[in-house]
Length: 206
Image 1 (cartoon, rainbow, N blue to C red):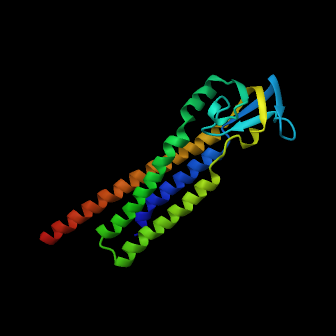
Image 2: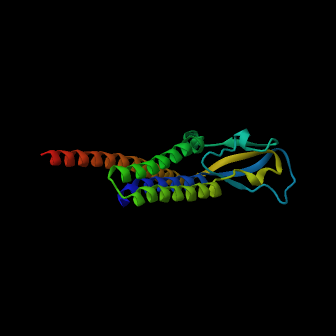
Image 3: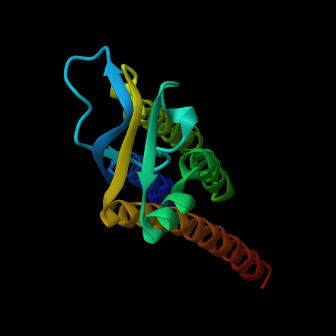
């Protein structure tokens, strides 16, 4: 019975790694001299360096205060990475939730298909739902809120890319591997369960 939880555990691991990749820094930017005179209602000055995560960008006006602007200078590799990951948080996250939901349904199907006891049929999806609720709360807690400390600044600044954190991309890649593994294991277990049922039926007839 525990085998049926393997896809769900892999999907959960992929979700955790994905959220971790979202909150890890992807780019480091050096903030240089002011292009246009700046002012601030904050205490202190704008930091000399900033980090952005997946889905964040210093040249996206929808993520920045209305009166704050950055003149961004990036490398070719930086532009490629940013283009690939620009909307990945909004596009992929719903699919991860869908996969975990399907894995929960699979646990329930596995219990019924293999004629488990009523207790197992009822308890297994309940456990999956509890784990899913825990992950939902964790996702809400860790999901990044971009640039919350910039909202009291205004003006225009130069921002030059100084570093790409490739370890963040490795974590993101590991998340995708875990999700693919969950799908492969789930389909494989479904296939083996159907084959075993057919073999058992043929043996009974023979």
